[in-house]
Length: 278
Image (tube, rainbow, N blue to C red; front, side, top):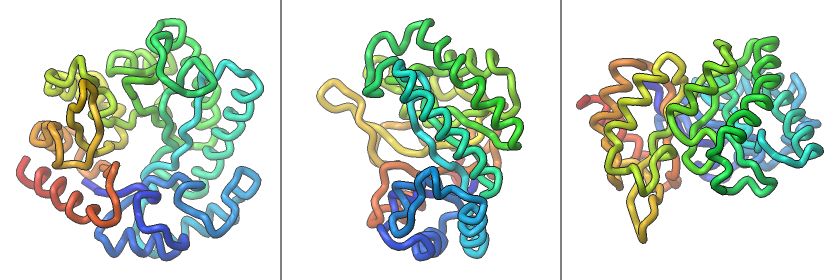
């Protein structure tokens, strides 16, 4: 696997130093959320020019760091039409940018049926799923034109809350430019965490052709709720997860989440050890 870290989980330093630090810590790739990771120059939509994309690409290439995911985690089911139109425009800007930057995927979660992007029961309805599919379709069509992959990340609190709903979205859109970021912890809640082995196997049974990126973190159960923690500090069955990755997805981008600069290397070594043992 090609193990990496989110840019905004690293030390907060200027961009070129950030990429150098990612390499020095032994990471092969990163998830780049522009506004979270870069602070010393404008990275808003108006600044996302070909020149900027090619500058970033040059720095990543010099350090042999892949941009596994260009993050664009906005609500594609926002009921506010004006806000939704702005969101669609932002997604397309990220797709254009990714086409020049050379990213693995443009990554996104799957929204909520409210402006606040929060959980409500209606997120899990069939109506919500259809809204998301309808709004995602033109984004994927644009990605096809630009030669870019869009990857959605199932999250229990959002519209695509489980593996079966992710499969429905893939089948409905029916495009090779739509794939999956699989974060096992994000599909786990207090009602199903004891069945995590079934969930892991289901994901690789139903989605293994389309899984493009893995997010690696862990979970504990506290006060009747699932809480995410760094890899190796919780209950996730890493033996099973790494064996599935090794079988189905050699050299896949695996991105650590929930780390801090002081525990990033220790966490990387835990995941690498589990992969070696699988």
